[in-house]
Amino acid sequence: MGSKPWNGVFRQATDPRVEAFTDSTGFDSRLARQDIQGSIAHAEMLARVGLLTSAECQQIIEGLDSIGREISEGRFVFRPEFEDVHMNIEAALIEKLGDTGRKLHTGRSRNDQVSTDFRLWIRTAIDILNDQLRGLQQAFVDRCEPDMDVMLPGYTHMRRAQPVLAAHYWLAYCEKFERDRQRLADCRRRVNRLPLGTAALAGTSLPIDRDFVANKLGFDGLAMNSLDASSDRDFASEFAFCLAMIAEHLSGWAEEWILWSTHEFGFLRLPQAFCTGSSIMPQKINPDVLELIRGKTARVLGNLQALLVLLKGLPLAYNRDYQEDKERVFDSYDTVVSCLEMATPLVAGVALDRERIEAGLDQGYLDATTLMEYLIRQGVPQRTAHHTVGLLVASAMRQNKTLAELAPAELQAAHPALDQRVQGILGVQQSVEAMQSVGSTGPAQVRGQLAQWHRQLAGGGQKEKK
Ligand code: ARG
Image 1 (cartoon, helix red, strand yellow):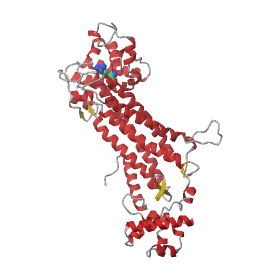
Image 2: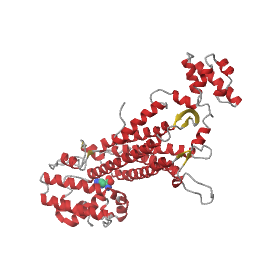
Image 3: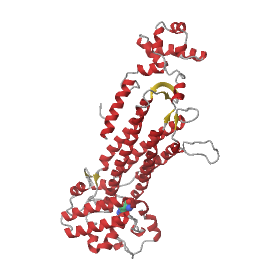
Image 4: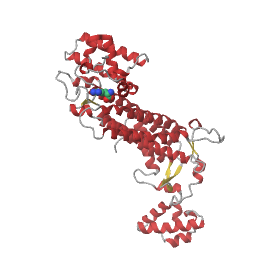
């Protein structure tokens, strides 16, 4: 009848095809360290409440530690007939300790065990991602001082709109990745609740001490309803969403830089160490890393979708469907980590082609809005000012001139307020310098923001609230 922990009631051996079908060790062995950590805390608790003697507890801890070493050294063989990481480790313990090993599963179930392991794993994953995102933010911040004198055309609808400081551009991405860090921190609060001790679904009649285990494992508190706790995968879904948002941010950025590094744009030169060549066209230096970051976003979004569909319509409490959650989360995490590993050195290593950017700055009437706002300051209603400048832009386009190159008489004719003073406001430099609203690209605003980012990233914490 085989050696399964649950085979008492069975009168038939498991079909080997079922063993293969239900086996999850191929992926959940990734939870081995967390499983051992959780089991050690659980054993210590059992000893504390008198369900194990301290000698038994000691033996169990030593047994689990040595299994942990076997796993990390690659000497442990996961057996599919034990279904998953949890029963494999328990079976190995029983093999070592006999009856003492058979006591470890007292007052718990794999249902609360797997959720505990997964939460411990995600908690560490969040901390690693937080550090990685901080490193990426630092790479953007480090670009600001050296590029402080550079202005870029800002775009809307992928059309030239208004000029911005390059530093303002770098800091825009800091904000996006800051929100990702905040989302992860918020997700972590809900991840960090201990489900262990809710047992299969109803709790246990044994006198366990859940607070002790929570404390040992560094959880902030307990998941309070056993039916809910054993079936809750909100934490995994939220984490998958956090990862999807990071991937979304990376993908937009990658797309932008693929364009900006083209011959047609010519704003950026990508570090060659992060480009690849063509097997047939000798001249090609391709942005494959950025393309893959953009492309890999698809699987991260797909994983989130798969997870939400997986959880849809599941009745309380535990269902084996949940086993399908882990691969989706692992894949999203691995993908995003690998993308972030590429992004940070790319940001640090990219070169702005200053001459090329500057040579194009007088194209696209980037100062048209500045001229309109000048008229508004002279008391002209916004709609009238907008129309007046629109007519001037149309005329300048016909003459192939910039706004500053229009004849003084034409400007005066368009509106009496447009006298020689407009030469003191036109052009990209003056447009940027005129910006003063909070959060704008005005140099004083950008310097203030940059100082705040320096302080915040040095502290490692999150951005100060204004
Ligand atoms: N491998 C399972 C999972 O990932 C563990 C829990 C199984 N529980 C059960 N009653 N079959 O969800």
